Length: 598
Image 1 (cartoon, helix red, strand yellow):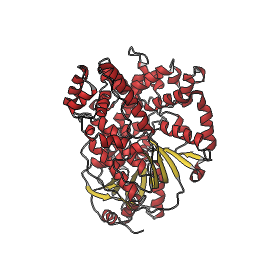
Image 2 (tube, rainbow, N blue to C red):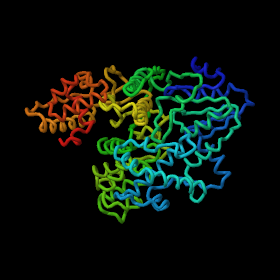
Image 3 (cartoon, helix red, strand yellow):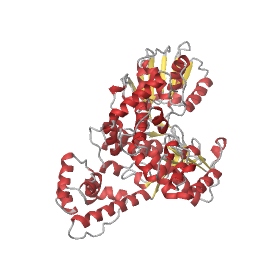
Image 4 (spheres, rainbow, N blue to C red):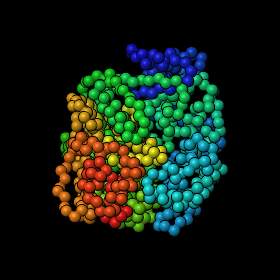
């Protein structure tokens, strides 16, 4: 194949470099050509993101006769250095919350379920420490990475107990008294300060590297190459960092995508511009060099398991001509939470059939309301999703899942499925001819009306990651994209390969907004207001452009004062130079109804 000038520059480079590669830009091809251009007597380590990428990369390097290249993942490398030599036993699935309560003898802190909430945070604290570059637990403040208000309050009140039990958990693994986790042996690998005997180290998917592995990488004497896409970082919730931004290497770029054409390239660039609402943002130009052709593969992509499952149910019920489907990464895994709780366990709790519940934690719950309270205090979003779907479909769930499984094809038949379903995290690195997006991603309106204070860095980084998720989803499409209206950037031109779908989400959000506005009107406005017209998301953006200027602490204080003194919605809008819709949204965001009794 003919290489671009950007690829040639990388292959001919010397010294430590970083490569920022947009989606579909041929970074694997570039890295292979880079390795081929090095002397065959030089040893090369290629660090892949996960096992599937490792196997594929190993195959490609072998096809090129590059026997001097060793392919590993961070964990497989750490395993060979730590576990083989220590005799420690690895626990493949990690520890569940209920197990830790018994193992660490965690006692109630006085609140209902507090021992389980503490155990849940201990598990997360261990993960936070093991993925960090810090040498001691005390160098971290776990509360800094707890976002939800209820969960953060709990952590601050019970921080000493959480810290003590986290120390105890780590000590038990270190002494070999219990099985160790994958995160733990990666941490031991980093703390051992290994010296890897390679002439070159190629670190792929650097935007999602853990600080622990980045620390190992940077301390090596080899020539170092780190490659990835700054805007494809989507694992911050696992405490990954954007390593491309953390290294001071010479910059190289791969800005042309061979996957898709210019329309999808332009859309991906426009989505990335939303980051200007969160932080300083340098514009990224993505060029599309992809060609059109017959549509052979179709996929539905969502941000969350629940939204994807909901969409699959919709497809099964409404598209009777759909004979087969496939879920990336095994359908059954979409009905389980990370800690092992099953959708069926939550359903049986809801139906009062406690004798059928297998999960130890859920079995100890007295009601689904108690489980919901637990999920709030632990930021367990997967569990919250399960609770929502159980409340929506109830006893219909077994029959619905049975129908989906009946249409689900085996792995070897994946290419023949009428539709492939996947979350963005599961399809990273993949591509499909036609993609439909589910309406559960963040949108520009959400970013504009819910600004994040500059001192909340971790929360802001996670919000940046929400934009990345949409970018990754958009760039999975090769030739055709179906996108909800609410996710489309303002003023985006019509395109033959991009189909805009009516956004149910924006309609539902408008109804909720109007409901709260009506309640507000009845509480503090003497004269009833006329019913506000419902606008589409693009109309709202255009009509009320001034509403999207950032809110400051001073403006919030002034709004609160006006609210509490009984000013009308119109008066507040005029006083603050905002639209009434913006005022309503900010009132909701600040929870003024809840705080001041309206």
